[in-house]
Image (cartoon, rainbow, N blue to C red; front, side, top):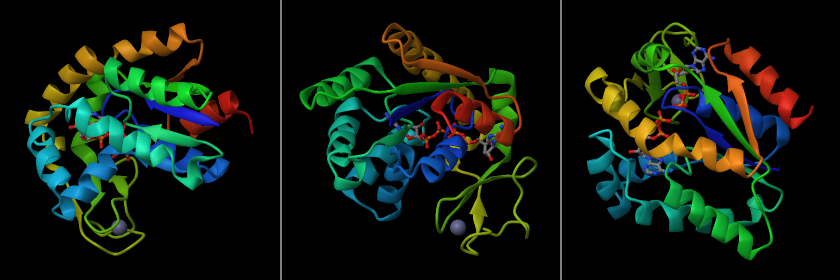
Length: 214
Ligand code: ADP
Ligand code: ADP
Ligand code: ZN
């Protein structure tokens, strides 16, 4: 099963992708997580990516596409995968298509998690990320047991630099301009599925299971 998650920043793609990966036993591939791991490890890629991410801009396609295509060739991707945060532009979607086409494969589902911009601002303002393992929480909707401490690894939680209000609006503008056209792109391929992302996390997941099959 090859799945893509679409939706605005903060719509809940990562939250749902983790649950899907667990239930269907397929790898969860998040380009945002890959970039953040590179930034943490001080790699060249991380240094380049950070300059764009901090401004709420997309990392250029040429830094993203090869990275993802290589990742999809790894052994664990044979039975499928869930892509979270990629593709984010039409050229990225075309490059993914070309890579899949070469091996006679295609995307099975593009799940669009729909959340209006008004709700996004509070989702992102309350999002907290673990500096140790990258787990995501929310001050109100997904709180940790002890305030400011990761439930899974005990490390400290932070507000991501790009989740600060001044960057959030920029990311939403970039989303509408560069990523939203993918909804039509996958609709034309007949694989688009839309879910109402304003529901509780569990209800969103139930809707997704309804699409993918139990
Ligand atoms: P994305 O990967 O699309 O950027 P996340 O999965 O990181 O989004 O979710 C953004 C924030 O909103 C996180 O703090 C997360 O805990 C919270 N969240 C995710 N889904 C929901 C939901 N259905 N209702 C309320 N809050 C949610
Ligand atoms: P969110 O889902 O909350 O927008 P992500 O973790 O997916 O956050 O992405 C964080 C940042 O990483 C993006 O704002 C962008 O700068 C960069 N990024 C992640 N994936 C891509 C991609 N496919 N193409 C370009 N930039 C990306
Ligand atoms: Zn952690």
